[in-house]
Amino acid sequence: MEKQTVDFDANPPVATTEYDDRVRMAIPGYEAMHTMALSFLKSNSPEAANLLIVGAGTGMELVKFSKSNPHWQLLGVDPSSNMLAIAQQKITQDDLSNRVKLFQGYTHDLPDTPLYDGATCILVMHFLPDDGSKLALLQSIAQRLRSSASFILVDIFGEKSSHEFEKMAAIVEHFWEEMGIPPEQRKEILESVNNRVYPIAESRIVELLQQAGFDNIIRFYTGFWIGGWVAAKNSTY
Ligand SMILES: C[S@@+](CC[C@H](N)C(=O)[O-])C[C@H]1O[C@@H](n2cnc3c(N)ncnc32)[C@H](O)[C@@H]1O
Image (cartoon, rainbow, N blue to C red; front, side):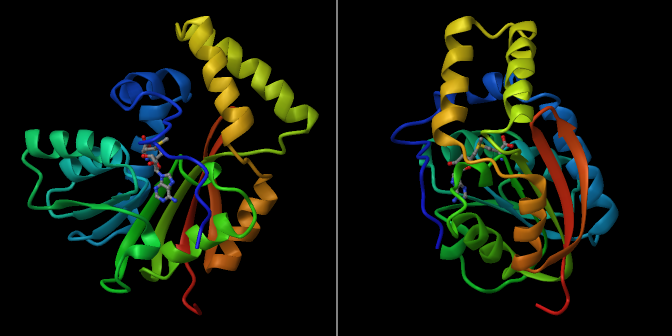
């Protein structure tokens, strides 16, 4: 079971009501990255796919994916009731409640069935330390996927103490400035990355994905220090 280090209810890295605006400024290509994830899922999922959205937050994947695919069913999992309350408002507003459901808790709390046709874990795993917690999260997802189901992982990556990572941090600070994030908020996000985020090298991400039972791993997105990988659930697991 994963060890939790971030709590979006008790001590959110960004106020949940500000999340939607802030994330679009802080994550390079946030909307485009989700559109890329959606395109991959569309080309690899059945018409009436049943998808698992891990760390559903305020509902970006749930709303975007379900609006684009009228026969898809989605389950959003997240421990934060405040984030899910915002997601629920959007689901109700867009009349998606019959196909989009929410579960407050962790993936390992879900029943073993049904098996899903695909899953995403976007901007979540970097909050977990690499002490077995990242692997446990990936395994809890893999266990709930049918053989050859698609999986999308998006995370901050790189080795924190490395020269490359420090250089990237300096570039990202300029990006935030260009995006109009005020200095005080830039400092807050950087502190959050320094103290509450546990990035790992891409080679380690690939290793963990393989250990959890995924193969055909390809990086599909890079936004400075944020990477996105697509993978398939291995048929031997
Ligand atoms: C940065 S938000 C990402 C939300 C959404 N995926 C997006 O792309 O905007 C991270 C979310 O992951 C949730 N989270 C944190 N730890 C988690 C875990 N172990 N399992 C599932 N969700 C988790 C948080 O509560 C938060 O809502």
